[in-house]
Image 1 (cartoon, rainbow, N blue to C red):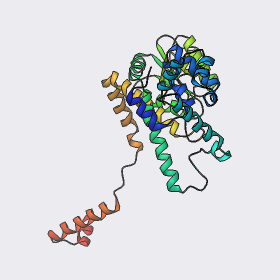
Image 2 (tube, one colour; image 1 turned 180 degrees about the vertical axis):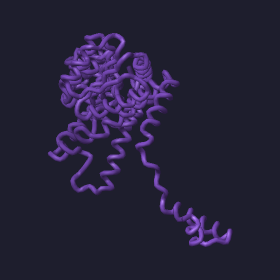
Image 3 (cartoon, rainbow, N blue to C red; image 1 turned 180 degrees about the horizontal axis):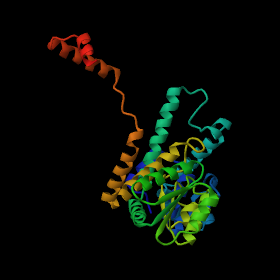
Image 4 (tube, rainbow, N blue to C red; image 1 turned 135 degrees about the vertical axis):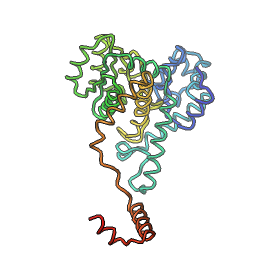
Length: 335
């Protein structure tokens, strides 16, 4: 599997680290190329000291396979791969405690304008990556399963719990019996009583959260159709699910638990919700209208902007002058 021109262009634009490229593309690699990838995941700096022939021998492959591996992850050849690895080493050795905790893109002396600009870039990048990583065929299949299911369980803890609650609320409003679980005991109890007519969804940015993995695995053992929503297609959560929806190409965010990591997931959840609604458009429309009407009395009307109120009052004065009455006379008449 060689990168297509379009995908290669995205890779160059995003400039991910070599290790991130390898992890994201490993599931699609042929076995011989995957051997080279596996060796470099264990020995990430090996190309800095080994020739292409020596690396091929260590990885149990041929020099031609090493060259093919380089092209697969977006480098024209072995020399460019070595440059990429050397660049990554330079990045990692220059990190100080600030960079480790806050993110290398931000400095303690950056202006608010610079921080905002970099955040916008980070969040926009997350959406681009999510769009590139989407498998619409899988998302469409999952949406149909949800629309036809008798029950949907959604599992997520800490930050992912907010996403689980958001999806649950949206599905419930269009008539899909959905429940979100963030507490593992309650989630396991619900997961254990699922069956083949139900869908269970686990949400985890890393795909390595034990509680979410346990709940989704339990639902799978009970017979549910299981779905993992994660940034890592090789994570334990993704591997145990019947279907996986990948929400980012590279798990490379500016700070731990960066909110930009959630944007790709929110985009996927929004798309999933809309596709489910399309599956039964009439029912979804009726449910949304009914729920909107039910809460309408609890929403205050919009306040008239001061400018609009002044214009309206001015028009009233003009109208009064036209009919020959004064504001005082009209007020007296109103009494």
